[in-house]
Image 1 (cartoon, helix red, strand yellow):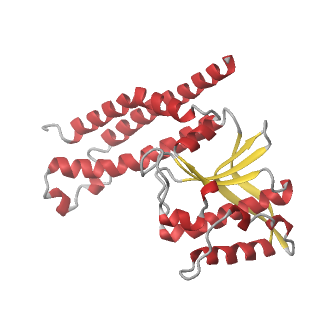
Image 2 (image 1 turned 180 degrees about the vertical axis):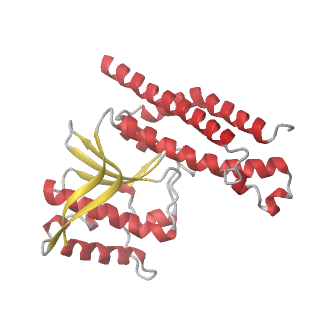
Image 3 (image 1 turned 90 degrees about the vertical axis):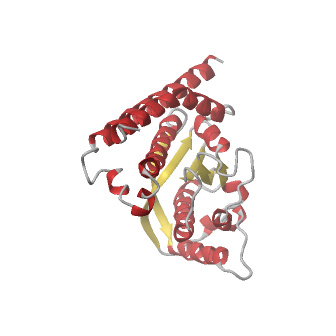
Length: 271
């Protein structure tokens, strides 16, 4: 019981620190750029079609894009810090990959991609891929999250998209990279303790609702989805992980609101 309380305190401490640091950095950066025509906001406010709607809309349109992008980066970094409490965390995978494996992956992805008689993804599609041999190369892949749970022996290869956006051009390559990482690990470890996951920090369809984005479902099966609550529960290694993260974030969200008000007062002093 004491361990779980200590872990929750540690998780909350990481979240509180991350939000405060983000808010301070976000306001400091944008305020320092107020007279810089190449500043993040200033570069985006010269859209005459947005400007015609008035200075507040012009400002908020530019700021919202910056906020969305930088907030996503903060959440990614925060999740890594939380995961490090419970797992060995790495952001690359390196090892032996066989040509027969890469050929099989390419064929599999083409079957997922084709418009007629398309193959529906299943975990079984790549089980047994370790048995493939042939000529080999040493390959290194950068990874969003490679987590190793020393207590259970499980290895998790995670592709994290904060809001779940997986565009048409990248969907195939994202799954290809994960499958190659899977092969590299399973060639060394065996297949029983390696999982591939496509993860999001929140559910764009609403918490608890099915994930139906076609581009993701074209390349990932249900068992590979780690959406919102499942993702935070995993990185926190707690069934209450999602509740802890959301609760502590809400407690500290006022720091971001205060930073946004400071930026607004700088860019729109007469509003």
